[in-house]
Image 1 (tube, one colour):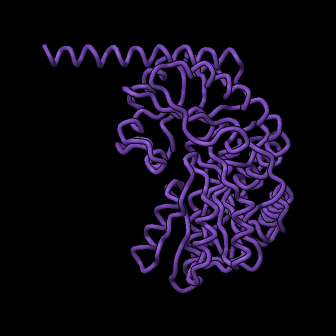
Image 2 (tube, one colour):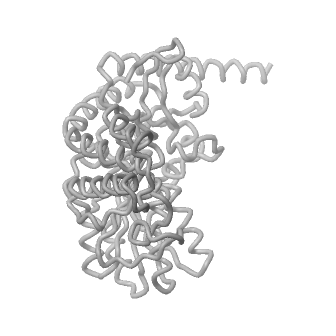
Length: 394
């Protein structure tokens, strides 16, 4: 997407970090920030209108994902949903073993690490070189009697690698082990007709909805303990007054993005592949993650030897191009991408990682512009480093 901001042209390729709020979602939200401002738990007419809006939104979300309305629990976003799933399951059963992978989002890895400090065992399932789960290792690990649950993200937010979640879910069901799927990166990017998990996390701002709104799909029969205790909202699983406007915006954006997912995938895949074609000849560049049907259609992660992510992002930003080094939640961290390191990439190379995540409003001319400026940025950075080294030697 290219638009004018503060008198500068912006070319945005960071859709995995966040997306612009859809105008339809904003329009649907506005009444609940103005005249229909009631608390959904209040018995009067304003409260009733708010309650109706929440339940209608719940039904709409359920229809998109092919689940029951009662299986939709509204939250503040992906991080809270992941915590409710992981810590909620952990509190509902005795300590045992958790199966996950080392390339999960930090909002999965950190609660898992916290549980390990409190008596749980964690087994990180082996991965193939593209980041996909080694199903043989998963199946073997599931044979252990003390496995309490499995948590594997559907799509990696950095590399775009898609996991075989349907197969993972089937293996878990065979052993009677609950399966949690961090699905934050999937809705709107690829068609989703059903939820391939017992629990799935969703975040509205990843598909044109508002920040601060999300949900956890929690299938009937899964035992969860709430993290927030107080009122009886959200089946008693998430106390606190519901974010009515955010919930309505989530449902509106989800419906629209679901209808457009196939077109989104077709267009962004073509543009992503064009971008890689233009970048592939750059000396020292490597592509990481899944390809073809094993990756999100809009995501391209590369490393460039002899450069740093910070320098590349800053250079591109001067040209009005917005990209990232990986997870937005890790922005500013001095450590290299934990995803790439887990996949065997050296720390030095991983410090030069750049993630392009494309949106539906980009055109070929935008991709050509980005590729041209990326080549130029790499050359400038390398020349600058060469001059600096020459100065040191001198």
